[in-house]
Length: 413
Ligand SMILES: [Zn+2]
Image (cartoon, rainbow, N blue to C red; front, side):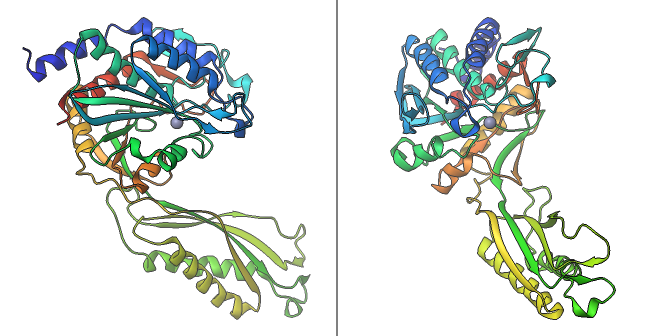
């Protein structure tokens, strides 16, 4: 009977032997174009069918939870759940997404984005990192338990979902809404879909995103007779200065985030008058706010209106404030959550590096779990080539990240 560390050594060693499998899986996935219909593609059907056949062939149970969508052939978007039963019912989930973004400007690619190119350790093609990295490391984790004839302590569950790149309404959003019984708070949920280049970032929290459009209406006129006009550009400038107060009014800091505070940035400014000697009577500008999850976005919107209207009154102009996007962040996954702790230990073991739980300024698919009170950790080792031309991933990194997953699975209590 092997001890856990001995078993891990055995599995970690074996994971180094799957180079050809990794290339084969990547090649078959890359050539099945899984761009969603929102981005003008055929959907994930072909790629899901390939993976379902592969995994069924391994003797695994593959279930589909299709989300109706009459824009794709078959009328539904696939959401596969694949399980390898463990001794216990509690699961270690690995969630990755099937869909990819379009190649973008094709002339920037050095080879066909939909034909895998292999150069030593490096694989090129649309999707190889985002999110085949996640898919491949979860396949490896299952494969190595099967090949060693080992039963994991917890059940290994792979979720291969649609529609991550265009909102997740037909993907994880659909799964947690329509099939909430799949996931339990005591499960470990790992989402390999973002991270940093040395594998030490475990994403556990997000800021809320608030984009506001501010329209200032005054009176246009000749620049030589400003007393007859209401200059909206001057009023907008004073508003932007007034919004500096937001920083003090929402002062909380959270060291998980970089920067640790909420931010309120004036960004886009629409063109007003085309000539210099006309006083503008209409100005439109935007704020991009990234707000700590502790604050309600409605409160922020309310204060932007009050501060702006105070200035509007002074300059005798009017102000309309419209949200372009308002995404209230889900409560953070605790940095003390067992899944985060298990990942940290595994990263220490495999990479000999200290991982840190962190928050980010934008949204990830993990928010759907967190909104349901399910602790989810987003982690993988990236090359940061997602969505770019000549997207690539490294075989050795896939093997190492699979070792991290296997360490978590093996040691999950
Ligand atoms: Zn992704």
